[in-house]
Image 1 (spheres, rainbow, N blue to C red):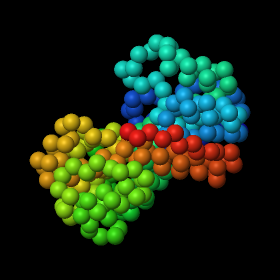
Image 2 (cartoon, one colour):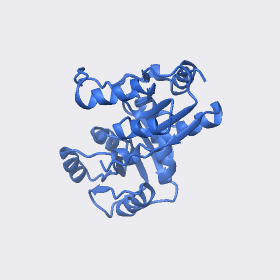
Image 3 (cartoon, rainbow, N blue to C red):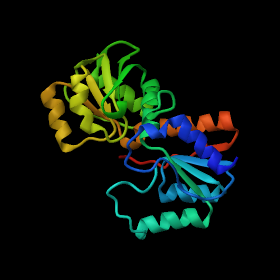
Image 4 (cartoon, helix red, strand yellow):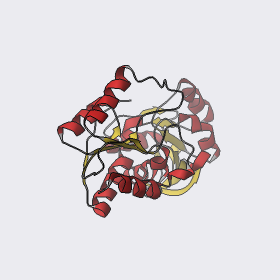
Length: 249
């Protein structure tokens, strides 16, 4: 498939024009004009690029790409090596950040709900990035839900707050959305879940009575790129392989 056609289809599918993002969405580095084999992953790190080269891929498709706002524009050090790897090997780098968090079917938030047994009931916050839902299994303690998350995500989360608080309504946003905590509490959440945790989040959770569950940035954002890769395989007939470069954060 022509790379430009692939990117246009993905841009349309994920409605990238709706989002004011921190990095460009779509084609970030131009490589081969034709794309047949795609390597997907959460982050366009050097290890993922090297894996793509070894598999003779035409494109790397990720959630976390390059060229973030407020980042140094100088092509030196780690950035130079990554860009050089892509250019020398004809790799297209395609990335979708907030559009892949928010997509109602393929997005990180939607897919995480399915993994954790949450029935979505609505969205909230800036660009509707926050999600709200109820546990399909019925109420359980915060510690019980934390144990479920540990099993499903293969990572032990950090629970802050009353472990015996009964949880039915959950608000969540994958990745580094700990800053949404107060909005989540205002939504009537019994528990708020995201990937990372900041110093102030600890105190907010203890003082508000709403437990906070930090499940890992990487751990909560594997599922969207997996789903997008599956969509490409099924609808466009391209070869897609997901490579999980583990990150404990």
